[in-house]
Length: 281
Image 1 (spheres, rainbow, N blue to C red):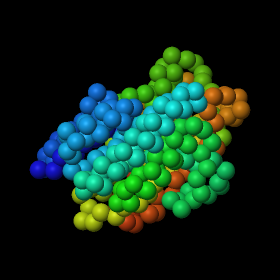
Image 2: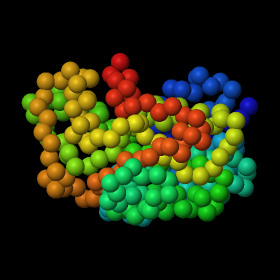
Image 3: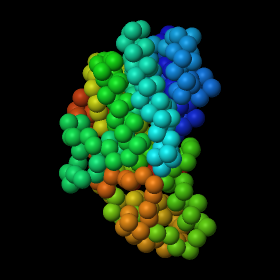
């Protein structure tokens, strides 16, 4: 029986994979939180991988505190770059299939058309910089890896925009949401299913792939959809990013082009509203 190691087991994606795992009993699933897979301690990480001896690794673990990364650069790069490099090398040396999860933050946000996998990367914050370094390290160490770039991830699990909006819309009469950052959300349950579909596909085709739900929206429009499905009675105003300064800059436009993953792996990607509705059911 093949053994799948899922890092970042308590995160949104790891949690959704855990939900799906019972549907795929042909695999032995190992869900590793930071005590079982220690991404910020490379010596220990090497030992842990050798003890677990996985056949497949879904690397969902990452340093994702975007604003905090501006002052925790070393930790961010240890987890998002050096640990990825080590995992990729381990995967190559031991003939392990590796799917590594990356982000739209590798882009600078100046595009006006959906970004494909060949689009130039140019991160504008430390988090994006560390994730791009991890992508490069992953493919340099192990060209047989698959990297999935995703964006605006949300889930029933963990902390995310949807859950924050649900809370605020119940607590307040009105809220303001940024209306000049454009992209598309990703329901973590959809991404988790896509990872398994790729694994189950009849051919392993390495490289970088984009994955998010379909649709082109702002965070403000996303908030309006959350209000609609939640039936909340809260006024929502749209504001420019300049009115809501954060330590880390965000890309203004990071809509991902999904043609490559759809044609290569024959994936059917739901519209963001369809997936958002599932979370409310």
